[in-house]
Image (cartoon, rainbow, N blue to C red; front, top):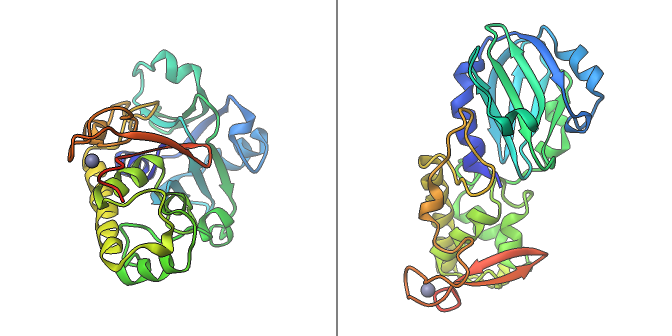
Length: 278
Ligand SMILES: [Zn+2]
């Protein structure tokens, strides 16, 4: 959390706003928010540069700068990117947990807010993006052209890991986290405990389309706001109202009326309906 739909929402919010904006000022409130250089160096390298475009890969946001450098941002557990107009009031929370603040040429600000501090910003030198391991090792985009049913089938057959664990593996498929992996498995009626290579062709087809359906629905709802997530204007998403199993332990399954169960897998909670998901 945040996952692909949340990063996508933020990208859509920001991509036009930041275009051609010069970085006039920079404040680094927490040095460890900058992952691969010092706060001082970060400021030196970026001051005066200009935002050209914003894209997304998996859960990562990629800002391209006029100099050819890039900023890659991972939102971790509680990361936010908040855009504020000149004189717009900043909430106490956003002020308190601001890790990096960019002041843009029109005095607007873009702040990286991260309460728990698992997110971070990478400064990538010119032409460094093609070599940046975190991006080049990512699996296919679930809403991209390469995520075909056949490719999905082939790669599932090569893995013995439990299907839920595999869906969270960013090298297998990029962008899914706990929420959307579990909702997709529920919609596909597949138990999170199944091993990937045990899925039938029919089940794989159901899962492939469930993943896409869930992500498209979540993007249309501007993401899921259960914890810290808000969009770039501080607004909550609404996909939390459509969740069937995630954080619904003990509640009724919308399909069969049975109870949603919670178990632990790799130290993370898994929610599912034992009746519907086999
Ligand atoms: Zn059920």
